[in-house]
Amino acid sequence: MRDFAVRYTAAWCTQNPEHVAAFFSATGSLTVNKETPAVGRGAITGLVRSFMTAFPDPVVRMDELRVQGEVVEYRWTPLGTNTGPGGTGRRVRISGFEEWCMGADVLISSSQGHFEAEEYQRQLEEGA
Image (cartoon, rainbow, N blue to C red; front, side, top):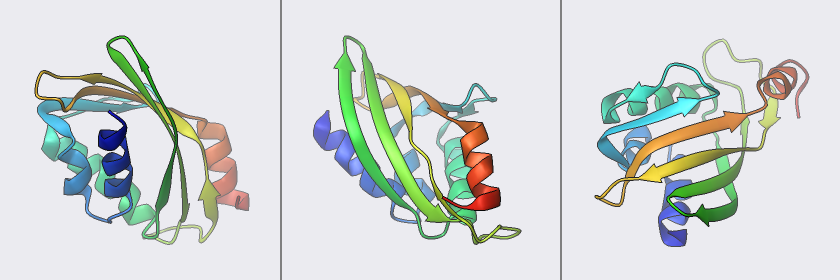
């Protein structure tokens, strides 16, 4: 699982959203802060692309990985500058985590992502 998480982290730093989506089952889902889930690799690619467009210089760090029964908790910290279209030019560093359920294909079938939205917004306005 650790190798999987290391490769997933590296995929987030590639500026290629398809590389991130490849870690999900074909019908997998990614939900961020209880918003509407992105279901399927195409939708996940679109969600990841929006982040990569807003932050064209992302560096994502894996902070911790916990396996608790059937659930994997992947803790991360991304750092990037919001210089995409309409960006603020501010540097943002925000920690969060994803709770993964893995499928029989050893890919993510469901990911529930969480981060502090208010802190993220503050950093967009004031910088990290």
